[in-house]
Image 1 (cartoon, helix red, strand yellow):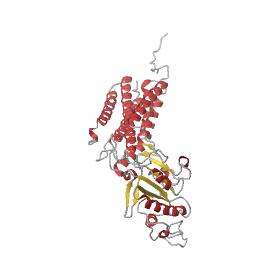
Image 2 (tube, rainbow over the protein chains, first blue to last red):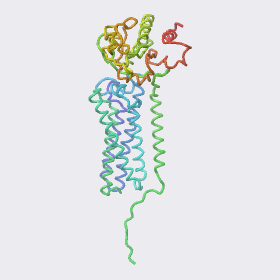
Image 3 (tube, rainbow over the protein chains, first blue to last red):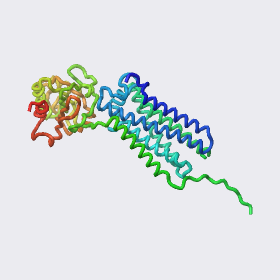
Length: 189
Length: 225
């Protein structure tokens, strides 16, 4: 694949990030439960984008394990590529588990929490779940720094699909922070 | 009687939606996993026969300088004999001689790779210089049992039996490769096909003809037996 930035799947993921951001911004401008629901839709969209991007990096990982010299789902040359990041056996796993699968698992948990809140934002437990969603999302931040550090300073290549997952987590954290803040100023419903 | 109006807090749904949310999450996850596995099935990676050998990037020495090598980049279609040795292990001393004989007999039909490890045993204190001396059969240490040299530091590496080795030695003194390859001890050998699939693992004798060692296995796999 010559130009990874022209990859249609990457463009779909980028669209997912923009759509998530739009829903979040749109919800923030609305009062009451309608706005809250729209913001929850944005948070949910961030988790879905992260979940799918992580799954896609797992696909690339599986492909590169079989074809280390060049898989068919992402470029293996150039600054923006997957081969030197997902294809590097030293850095592409965490105690034997691929980063893609770990990200997929983490986003699944976040997806579940936000989905629960979205399905019943007025439930007694929804405030507690919003806090869980915040702290669980924050737990991913150290891994985010480790992975970005490896990409920039160690292998010196940027993996575009990994970056989508990283941005999805950042977007998700912003969304949940806004939701918590909405609750604190009694604007939840 | 005056009735005071009180603003009611909105109430959540009567049923607990969390079970339904869990079911939806499980369905989404299942669909994504099945689709991902359909697009690129996970490879069975490990040192067991039939699995794809764990790939590694490490420093390799081929007689010149130490250079970064990657196992999967070395595959060229030939069988690959990977042997884990510890320069201080007495059994590896004799194994090195056997490897010299096999290398001579294989006439280039097999790629030899030796992975040098340092087992956590008293007296096993290796280094890159010691690995080089073991491979090249050059002077390193003496025979004074003072900890210098090969064979638990008891012998000069130049006295190793067999000829100098002319194939790649890989530095795995930190045992990171050994850990991924489930190294049971040294010497230990695995034979791969030309694409990196494990054909023969010394630790799985139940799969092999009775009493088969790596030399017999190479013969059988090369079609000579």
